[in-house]
Length: 488
Ligand code: BGP
Image (cartoon, rainbow, N blue to C red; front, side, top):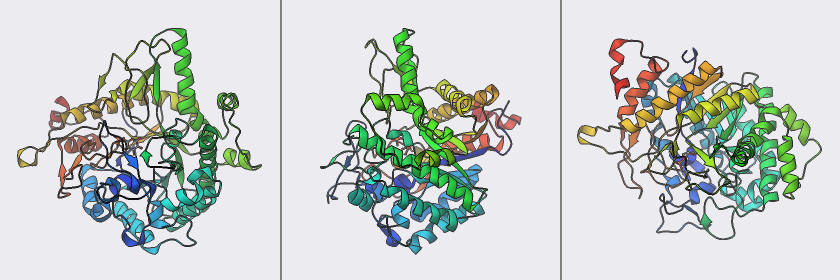
């Protein structure tokens, strides 16, 4: 069994981590433009006012804003069929609530999407990827306000009409479950803390956070409906951060804890977006926690009518849950838990688990019966540029190979998998740490944590590995001379 014909092989990036072009061409500021640089052990901060001596890596990213033709040419060389990228809302609507969009922003994305199409690459566009206009966060407290729904719909209408015929695949919100999981107040909801604080801080109370999530659900459902009305060919997906949680032991209490975590962390959002209603475990949990959502009369119908066309998710790692407090704590950007003694851990503390990908693909497909797409996956590692611009990233090749094998196995299990876009196909700024040093790419970008560097692009060994995978549509080598790279 191998990958279906027409499988969408590609890569993923996001505007806030790659684009740069801070305030260029009339763009406004995003909340993420105010995230300082951090490290694995020092948190990134949100600063209300920019400080002169602080590096804000989002503002420069990898300067994809100016380099995209060169970068797209490299993606085409690898044979990409799709590129997942996102738009910066503040580039299109500098204040977030402007009556008309910024023409320079509109033309920028038109050229970007046209360039992709000319290179035979289908754009897959995330409408909101940790990128909220700063003014909306300040003025309305972001998604805490219902007002955001109409503003988001205004953005969507602009996108669906301006880029009709250029873009067919859309994702409404990146990792929408970061709000239910308690990490997304600032970066996903734009609910700003009173003072400066680490970007993953949750300052909103539970009711405010779940109200913001509810607003995003309603906005997403309306966007799906609108996309279909404007062009029935449009395909719109949800995007969930797959938070694979295993029971640490066979103690029945651990099994129950893992089930609850899987429900709460993954299926709550997936059920609303794929099935069109809150699952009963979520309603019951909210009741127990005193959360009373402000529902408008039409919300239930909107959710029901705006279910997504496909289910997409990010997957990096798994973790365990224990009720017996006998394990060691794990790390991750948006998941934690107990360390799994059977797995290896990346240099940034994330546990590498290709079987977890197969497991989650089966869970998601069997639950929703919708086509599934893995829109983020990869290994963050520090690469070394050796003599003659050689970058031997066999650790990354091994990671990719094992996860591609897991996808092949899931297809054999019966999963309808439509595509794979590994994260950070070109090096970019890390979301959790703000570092450049934590690299995911097939293409190295000469840029350092402090913002220095020439921005030169250099293909790594994984570039050729992935080119071959795409050329032969999967792992199984078709020709004898293509086997070498598989024996690393
Ligand atoms: C996901 C985000 C991405 C990306 C990725 C890797 O949660 O959607 O934006 O950054 O994680 O995380 P990091 O950059 O922290 O290594």
